[in-house]
Image (cartoon, rainbow, N blue to C red; front, side):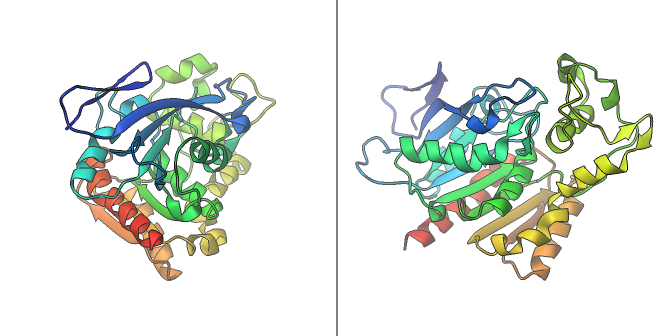
Amino acid sequence: MKTVLLLLGFALAMPGQDAAGKVQRIQVHGGSLEGNLSGDAADRDVMVWLPPGYAGSGARRYPVLYLLHGFTDNTDNWWGVNKHFVSVPAVMDKAQAAGAGDMIVVMPNAFTRFQGSMYSSSVVTGDWETFVATELVAYVDKHYRTQARREGRGLAGHSMGGYGALRIAMKRPDVFSALYALNPCCLAGEPRAGSKAGAIRVPEEIAKADFFTKAELASAAAWSPNPNKPPLYVDLPFEDGQLRAEIAAKWQANRPLAFLDQYIHALRRYSRIGIDAGTKEPAIEPTVRALHARLEAYGIRHAYEIYEGGHVDRVAERLEKVVLPMMAEHFRTVRR
């Protein structure tokens, strides 16, 4: 196989080796991200995987899988620049060798000052729903030979990305037609008492906080922003040890299990839906089971699996052997 090295945004092929996918790093401007109160850049790094032979395939057009990474993560981790639990280019090359159909894969870098965007719409972190479903899709359709219709687009994600995939998919069935959520976080739940988030006073302290403190602050930035409360611009669900019911209600309104009923007609438009969770996921597994039960109750066909594993130890395998084959079969079906 040809080795693809990412260096200063270019894909370099080692001579004398066979063709493999090509990696590109691009930047996409998000008008919907401009002016966010966090000060995060509106120009976002985006990683693109092009299938073998793309450059020489003439006018052929390809389906696109939009893939969303998780909280505290980034595209360099997921695309093999850093050693990590998954490398999308390596996974794609394996899936191709196993017979998965040709597709383009696109991942935006959603790492923010709050360590993640929650793929939500907020004045603090920006309107990530619009960026992913409208601006990013429009850019990719303009600059690559895509099947520029909903039937040629899939959406998948892991953890925060799984949450984002579900959230965006329910709101934008006009854009996507296949969906997979790997270990999706945040489907349900109440704010945690005893959080240390209230002790964080300035944005520079966020990176040093523990994971759950970061997660609470990112959730607040996404779901309970307060433009009159610098420098973090968030309202937290607990103040002086007391639950603030009005803030907790805002969080609950952003839980997919809370708003699912309003998007059943949207979900019925999807040709493929998949959800999963590992058995070692005490916070996520019960909510995925609940989501499965709700989808079944509405008669929405979907793939569902609780598998032996934790949050990250089998992500690459699941992507290669479950998500990509499902997407490939979907794209083959809609081409007929």
